[in-house]
Every structure is written in C-alpha cells, then in structure tokens.
Length: 129
Image (cartoon, rainbow, N blue to C red; front, side, top):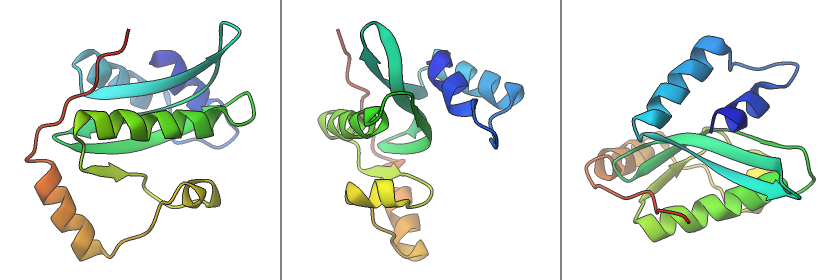
C-alpha cells in the first residue's frame, strides 16, 4: 500500500505530500484504505489506492511504470468492488482514460443521493490470497 502511494506521489506536480501519505497509511492499517497493485516480473508495475466508507469507494490516485498497468489496476478494482457488494465508485473527475472504462459524470443531486445510500450499506473488501 505505502509503495503505491509513494509511486502515485512521484510526479512533478502532486497533492500527495508526506503528511497526506502518512494519513493514508494510518487509514490503511485501520482497514479503511486499500490498494490494487499490478506486478510484473516481481516489480510493482502500476496501481491505485483509495478509501472505503460503507459501500462507497473513493479512488484517490493511480500510477503506472509499465504501459497499461493502471488500466489493469482499474479493471481489477471494479471486479473487487462488484465482488464485495460496493454501490459507488467515486473517481473525482473524468479523464479520457477513465471514460474509456465507462465513467460518466452524474448531476450533483444524484451523486449526493447515491452517496447517502452507499455509506449506510456495508460492503466488504474481498480477501485475496
């Protein structure tokens, strides 16, 4: 988890400073923040992380060092969220990369209603081997 956050922060412009990274690490140890990692030849090739509340997952950042690895991480995230009974995936803003996967903007009032509902429903982060 911590390495995914570090890799997400390793760019010229980032909002992820040491204090933010430490906060997410604390959330992770408490079971509220999760990462999806893509490995290639024993090395971290890409990934993403975010926070869950109820059945809502809030994607925070993603990275790749191998082409396509962040796309693979996003596809795996969606699979995990579906398996765990999640109701909402918040991606903050839509990029062409995310639109390719079917992301769509919804009106604020609809988002707030979905958010109110999803934080009241408990989902589970699937256990992986």
